[in-house]
Image (cartoon, helix red, strand yellow):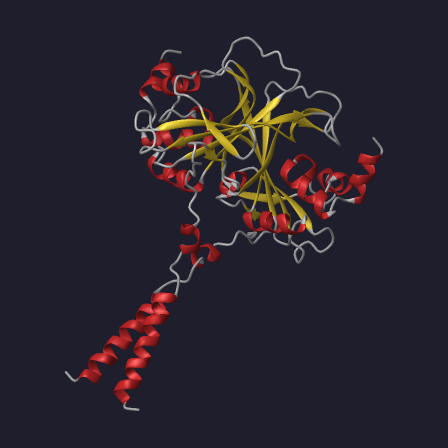
Length: 204
Length: 204
């Protein structure tokens, strides 16, 4: 074989190698977390939401001054998709396609070495997703989905209290950033706190 | 220029291209979360631990049957570095270089629209890191660090109760997986629950 042909073969091999090597971050960028809807307008619960960025938890939080008559206690955990979280760190508010998952978990006590207080059990008692999708929900930009079967969430009608309450009391862009301690600091620095929230705080 | 030389130049260019293209995930792998120690054997608190994988939270958890006499309530949040979390999903136990960060946050109540229950405030009341480093801690493999200044954690001596308690009661590899609901399911499936924990559970 002539040296020229050996070179051509080597060149072909090198080009093949260059093309076949995936670029940095390609895997990550192909798996962007964006809302996925079913044909009937429901939302698919993102299967990996527990690996998203944790915002905060509450225990038995209630908007009513009367204590709830529950025979159990419940934790609420909130997770944000990493893309939205990163933009919040930069801008102090949520970008389009933000998804916030609220997970309710039954609280346990007096198990193993725990003798007081509460911990989270394996019993998921509720799942809701708050989605910002400006093209799909042009009026309010955000929508709530209630996931009852652990797989897909039904769109909650915009007449429900959750919409008006979030609009009237949410510290940033209709979301309860006042209960997400690390994000509240960012929002203060970026001056993105809502007028309604600032008024409420000033009136105390 | 002879065709042979053109081919050599093209070959060199193609090889350069192949070598210079970073591989998939390279960015991620360069920023692996591994324990970093100071000259005096303290641990640097990983600055981004809040973006790690959330395991669970508790409120006022106590190993003592007597309620604590505290004038406040406190949440505990636990985060694992993503590399260790991924291996746990696969194997049901922790790999070398695992870091678990325990963050204590003062609980608030009756703020904004919240009238009952507890939420997490901006006040961090404690930070501890549980590190698995087999080369550094050959005897017990794990060590505890207490972060008082928010920057570096002092190594806790192995005579302290936390070591013996975790060894005697931790559900998996001296860690309290019994309080991390999603990981407990994995450990059951992978049969990695500790003998001590199984005995405790059976004796109930």
